Image (cartoon, rainbow over all chains, first blue to last red; front, side, top):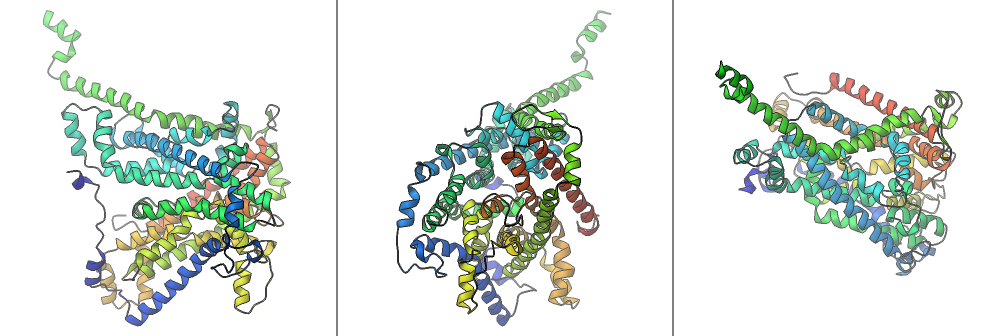
Length: 302
Length: 320
């Protein structure tokens, strides 16, 4: 039963049916060949810098400006130096910190955004339209307007050098993108389901937990994945709120790394950059379909 | 008499009042439950977003160097900003140039490649993955570090030029003339997310429309501009809006590439970077708040302008 009630989505023809059907703007074979060549060229140009960085991370520092990808003298020096870390803190610590912060953010966003989205999608309360309009408005609000008062507030709460400035705003549902995503998803779930449950005497809380959340798994997964990636890449929040190297997340540690190694340990810098990208790439490979569909339906930016 | 008073005291016993009362009770209950569900967001809105928006307006009229207490100075911050602060105008120009150049480029690339891979391309999944990955990692510090080396005097770009027989030791990132261009290229490199949105939009254009245009003898270029673009215009509008708001707030790459200075010669001094410097390097919280509010007004005006334009240009179907 659950399989049949996922929200209506544009039914995408499979590769086969698409090829069989007549398409008016299908290009001729020579045009197709040229197109394929052009696409390959663009893909190579776009991907080359990434491949080059991976190659450079295995290279001795003296050969760093070699434009090739495969290193002629393979070395793991970069990784060895890199993992020694910055300011006496091992790089593993930064990785651990980043995972901790990102995981907390994911949990916080899942709880707060789904609760908020359920209220907007399913409960009729007074001033709902107004609050919804305000929520959408916060999507366009530049973060820098609220930066200073937020900083002063968190400072007065003694939250500097803690992870609370990362997690608490998310626990309070301020990530409007995901609230909006989940509202859209909840709205697409047929109302008959919760009407029936209400007639059976279910309250909103039970409908939320027993019906909506299980059905919204794809949207929740999309929220979790994007929250993880954004938090993992977040540089600004740690820059403002963290000054203790033991608490640094990866992006801030990388920045500190630039300062301490400027002009010498390129290999280590690249090695640690590669390490910091791996989890994001791993998440992308594992959840590619969800990510692409999430972007296509909500238009979120990475 | 007695029945009447009973009915007055217990209006729910009268047939007409019964359903009304029930509906009202359910309405009140929904109000309560609704606000309970909404309470985390409401708290967040009041303390994390709405409150700070108001607070920063107030702070923008004060002189506040974080150590003392805010001193009311009226509109002086704004006067200094508009009449004496060259770096304010400069940073605004840098951000606007970045935005005006890179947003159309991103959209053009995204739309071009979306139409390219839309029909019968072998390896669509691979292209989509390669084009999309930069959008996921493009804002990270690691990529900013990579960019520093790509465009350094002994970097990959000059290395590639050498392979092509052009000797160059020009530091693209170290020269004021080209530093901002490298950041624009970095933004264009991240066209993949927009491309995926366009691809989803293209898939929804009915075949019949294109067929009708072919029957009428329209060339492929004509079909693209007279059929595809109008039908995609709501999506284009959405993409431009999101990309624009994002470009106003770009920070990370400029910070990393210039070591937080906005250099060389302030050529990568994004508005947000200048705001950060005033707030968290100079600890001039009042002035930084004023900068924040000016940004809010600018983004608001730009968004309103785009909305007004969309009323005239965007095609929402026949009913409008």
